[in-house]
Image (cartoon, rainbow, N blue to C red):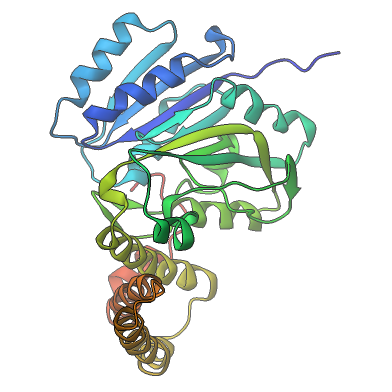
Length: 327
């Protein structure tokens, strides 16, 4: 006897990506999943371009129900969590406004929830769709999670720990999302202030649920030339420093004195080490300088974020929260 297909809401948070959102919407509309069993919710996170116009145009010609939600409070996690509130589906599939899910991506990812009753979160392959051929150094050092890419060799993984799932290609049981307090703080405009889906997945793991990787569920990440530069990776690693600071506090708490010691005896030495190493590698013509320079920016931001945790009680209280559904 076949399992009854479940209802799904595809949730797309977006901010000033009018030039791309139509491509993402078209790929979501063309899913092989039964059209009457899924909807698309576009959560416009205070865009100032013509995003709404583009979405309205697609609503008129779509064979799948599209709902537009305007969320003026800045923050990708707010957009995701608010969209989840208006969904009436059993499963929430989160993607981004620069993604192109394969035609069978939705069908393949949701099947795992019927294979194992304890799976609460599922992800799949995220492959690059380059605007043009990337430089060799990028493929050597950054063709990975730095661009939210995942390409595991296994066809199916079910694990009792976070196996590395990104919110650009992530399905979650709706009731578990609410039970575990929603997405943690994420990108505000272009700055990553918290640990987003990483924090959410930590809460889901602590609640005793399993994670799945479905290799047959594939989505493509559109990567423009602007993301193939050293400047971009410096910024990306800096954002990761902010995120890791947030994660460490939610995991271990730690006293203010601990953060001061960490900054003085770990982060600052690592910052200088990576900077001078990047200079030496560059002078010697070795492309390893690129990863060292990115790490330098990581530690600059990690220092700032940990210092904030050591000195700002209001921020410590915010990071300590469990439920971000009502931010």
